[in-house]
Image 1: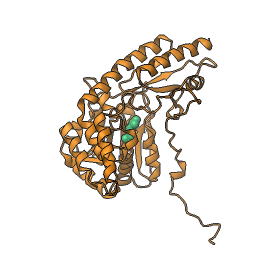
Image 2: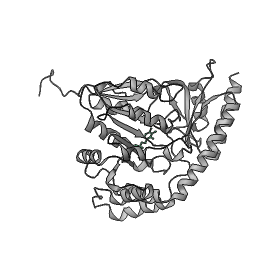
Image 3: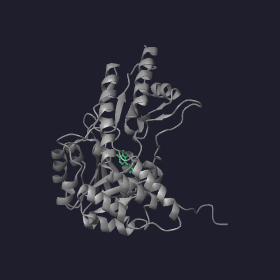
Image 4: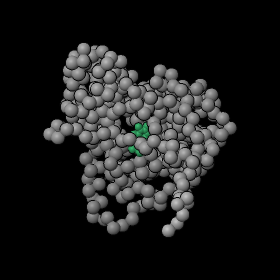
Length: 369
Ligand SMILES: *Cc1c(COP(=O)(O)O)cnc(C)c1O
């Protein structure tokens, strides 16, 4: 049946997408796995979130609340926001995709930075739009380079702040300068997935700017500091017009009941968040100095991960280090797809994992001398 010459054809751009490769989680049999490849928290979620999740098992036959009211209310209360400006998503990845669905037509352009999060590129191409890459400077977003890429076709600028996989950030006066240079019809998306971890006086996630401008949104996630990556929960703070547009396009029940309940409990447990941030700060600093002492270069990070650069020496590169670490149970992330062929990204892990990686890398570098 049917003609050989006729077949369904994906829209332009879709077949240019390189499928997203998630962090690995496989080690040899019998070796204890320390997964340090996806920036998940070593502390796990709040016990209150686990309880809320378990309570959902009694009611699986019912559709969830399509407005995710309990979650939205908790997010709004904790952050001092109007719930009308909050929209929840099946992970912030879904929200990034919805923003592209709503604001990009085929032929439009959207900008992201040289070492920026790869989900942006995928979602831009999926709409038949054109990804435009702005160079970074010293592995940090460069406002002038971004502004130089703006054209009449530009509809969205994506900025991960702090960025993954570099861990670098733009001070907020730079973000304001970026916004000031954009035409009002260009949407500035501030992806603040790691905002909770940043303790710098010159950093802001973007709440004030969203409140005062009509063309800025901030996305956040429960996958990192809240330890709920498996449940897929993200949220966005945005002008009401943006929320209203996305609300029309999203799945009517895009958050499941377990996500709504566990997310609300997690964000209200401020003590757990604080503990996670403190653990991170202590061990990120420790890892950075220990690895630097081994002769490796670490990009200064404000997130819950570090980017480790390996020597150009034959046999001592990121690929060999990755293999060596994996046989010992430490799974880090290769980042060649982000423009770092000779680096590994390591999530700040438990004390055991952190000490283990430093010991293993010390051994690795000695062997290769
Ligand atoms: C981890 C991460 C996210 C979170 O994605 P979810 O879909 O919410 O799990 C978003 N942006 C960046 C830059 C990230 O690293």
